Image (cartoon, rainbow, N blue to C red; front, side, top):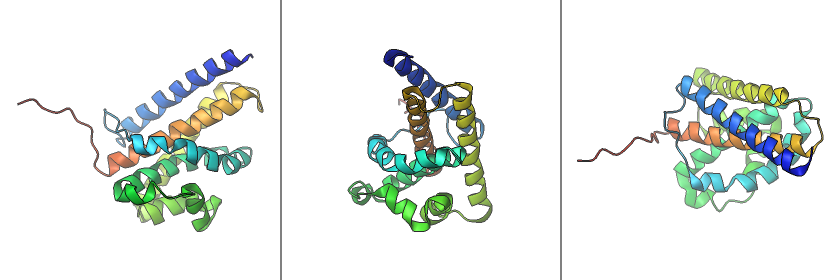
Amino acid sequence: MDNNEAKKLVSEFEEKVHKDLIAFLQKKEALDPHVPECPDVEEKWGEIARAYMPDGAREFKDYPVVSLGWMMLIGMAMAFYWDKDWEKYSKEKNIYENLRDKRGYDNMDETVVEDVLGYSGEAAEKISELVAECASRVYGLLNHEHIEPGTEAALGCYIAALNQLYLAGMAMELNALGYHMTPLQAN
């Protein structure tokens, strides 16, 4: 597969993941028909991805759903930080590392769901299950691509999957925080 074919495959895969996640989250009523956007959080993607890749890529081999799902949680945390005090959090270096190091990589779900977002009990379980379902769906989409592991296309699809999970997590948390994108009514 040449470079142009790989780029096309990755682009089409990312669009497929985007559509699947949005439709699924809307069906679960975790997103409104118009998905909230947040350019401030979206701009942090590159920084977050670079910090996450060593951990995420290492864990993907044995724990692919965790590797994918944790990025959705990070997107949720970033949306929460945006709402809480973006002036402070936008300047913070090592946001990913700080989240990871609170309880360790293996407990990122508890760190984000309980410590950052403040969920507990049944609500925490519900959020964790929804994130796991999304990550499992994306992992299934990755498997259906039948891409040779270790190739440029495989890495590109993994990064595309992480990006869409980050954005879906961000949108889901913005929705949960009350950012509902509705059309303005003309008087």
